[in-house]
Length: 78
Image 1 (tube, rainbow, N blue to C red):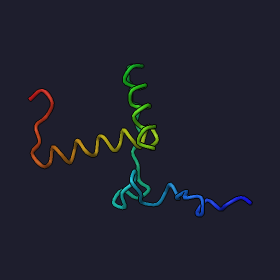
Image 2 (image 1 turned 180 degrees about the vertical axis):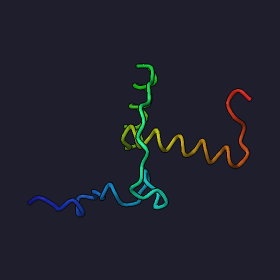
Image 3 (image 1 turned 90 degrees about the vertical axis):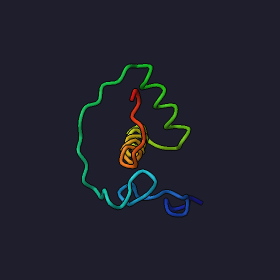
Image 4 (image 1 turned 30 degrees about the vertical axis):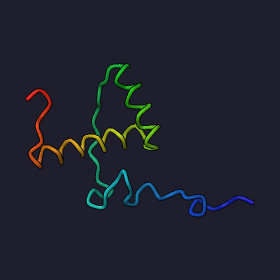
């Protein structure tokens, strides 16, 4: 017997979760990001290990970098 998405542990992608804090809501800014094939494959593999979409993982990494910078963390190369 098939289980409903809720019973299977699926969540609504528009609801807050590990990749989408409530503060972001549904508003997003889309833009093109060019990556080398090597970086793309590394990020895709990493995202898969973390059970995130590639887009969600890139956003997660960028959010962490922004928060670290706000806390006074050193910038790479500084």
